[in-house]
Image (cartoon, rainbow, N blue to C red):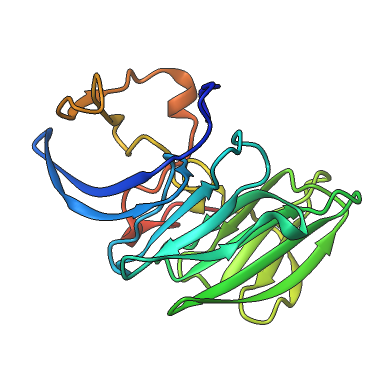
Length: 229
């Protein structure tokens, strides 16, 4: 559906774990299937054994009516849907234990929702703001704090557990993944590619051109924030 196809029904998405070593690709067994379409920018925190992905039901054309799902045991659990507004961003903490959502309510207000993943549940708090953040939300290294920078340049520090807010001076942009759900490219410009669904995967290197150099990436989770302001 993301490519404007005319056939928009009866999607079945298959998840497999691919391991890249020495620029060769090992395709693992099928993990599970999802009845619907799935965007490619999913998140797989290794230490959690969870897969977090954006998916949509059949006959949808990849619009705003999508949902965030989590898979941990071969079944997909809905974490967030579009019933309360369009999901603008969904960003995981570095350890994969928490998520923060930015939701457009359609009433000139945006809601920040954050929660801790526990089994198949997501405990949330809400914070409503009328200003779309200029940058963020982003996470601190320990996953305890969320940072948001508004259009005026002010930075707000939000406690991920309580939702309490304080003004702060610095905005650690390098805590943010390449896109709101992790991105298609690994750090170092590696991309998995295949000519057709039946062809083997190969590893391509993306040219080091300016837009990619300027995108912050998480390359080493143990050192996130080491050189941030």
